[in-house]
Image (cartoon, rainbow, N blue to C red; front, side):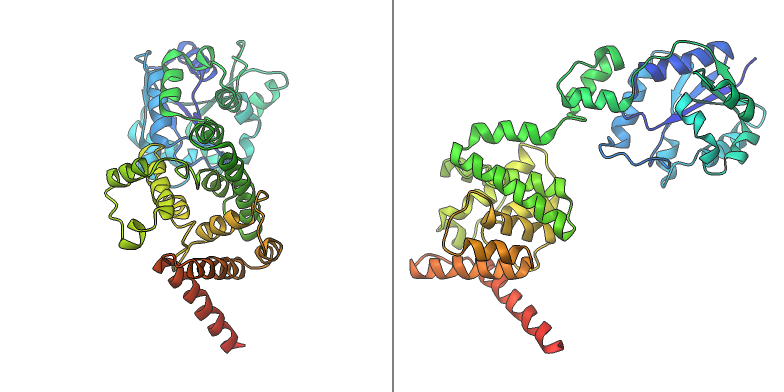
Length: 383
């Protein structure tokens, strides 16, 4: 018996169970080739910590690359959109009209096969192949599937990701080289735990406690106003990451980032930590999310046209549990009703305090204040 096997999946990450399954069918069916097909966007499930296609593709190449019969394909990525099996099989059937196609899958996928998009059309183009588990002989009969009886490797990609988050070794589950790749790329790790350790080293105990409290407040505000809570938490955690660094260190990383400081920033050192913090996040931590970077950069001054995340971090910095100042109760009450009203109250507080002390007021703060007032005036005019 000969033909071509197709083994698709999210592979997040690929593991020894995948390798054992595909090898069993390649041997049983004497397949000339097995095409391993990482999905671009999984159609059947949502994955919160899905690694990029490039990372999943590279891990598949490492794991399956030791067997000459296996080829890892980029075609679902290049096709774009959700990765429906029927589309992939249609493409392969056109390419290999004289070859018998075998679709290899895990037993969990076989049990839900009748829910797949156009599953009846899939059955017309290929033979299903799955490992046997209790009660699945009937499924094999219904779908005409070939059932391979062997002891499966009892591990799931979810369990492996959890092991990585907990700092456990996964070498036995994915092989030494895939484990090395995952660690080297920082995949599936609990980034906030790493950030927590980092700010614990860079900040004083007081500033560390404040940062954790801001992160918690930011998460709550994000949940209330419809922003990504995880992103808000991380931005809150890192917003003061350079606060306790010396001025020369702040200036050094700002210079590395090719940021040109205005005269308002050069003559107001208290503003440098926010600019340096955003630069540190990008250069040292590899964070390229522009919204997160701006949320940290402008959390002290505010600015015009702030995003929802920027407003959340600005307000969270004012209302965190560690804060104690005249008006904190009102600020927290406003934050529960309107971010703009809370920002206006915070800006009034800051601008008035700076003016009384004859300190520089950054134009971004003035612009932010004016924008909110103008928007509120326009809103009243429409009523």
